[in-house]
Length: 244
Image (cartoon, rainbow, N blue to C red):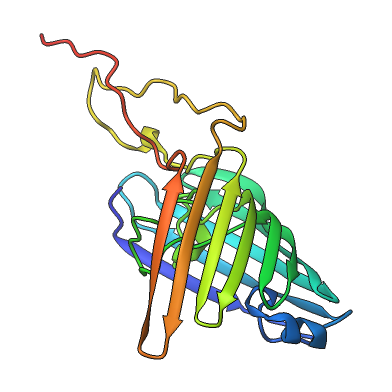
């Protein structure tokens, strides 16, 4: 889809940090103790307009409210990220409620566990990251923030820190969630169509498992990772071909 103009209208950005300024996910055990029984609340309100394509006068025109919160108690915590959007999306007017993240965790100096809907960036590259395949993406959610396209997925994540400079991270995803891709927006010509997509069944066999080892040194960092499961993006299989 050709894009001619992108206009981002930041009407209002509001952040309320009552107590904490850091994400609970980045705290070690000593940090968590400082936030016992305290709440972190934040959010924003914004408006975005994206237009000028060949197919739509307004490809994306909406207002959005985000409410983010975190609650800590001893070494445990809860974290949520809830989004409300209303407007015009690729020619369709609708209201969207998205639970982007909602998970609980236990954090200590050597071991951490997180369970629930999470967004995990897998790999160390910015921009196009070929190993970042734990979370699906909504590729047609038009926004100036690439991270907004990431969709939360239910997973169990564990972190183990045997050394100060090294960390082993293990992730288990029980069921597959695909990315969002709108093939109907592309005019491929007569006689060309997409069949109904086939998704793997939601069972233990079709779940995903990933592991990586991160090393952070003063001179730099490196990671080695492995992933076994279905890629959130679609693959293609040719059903038929007729030469006339």
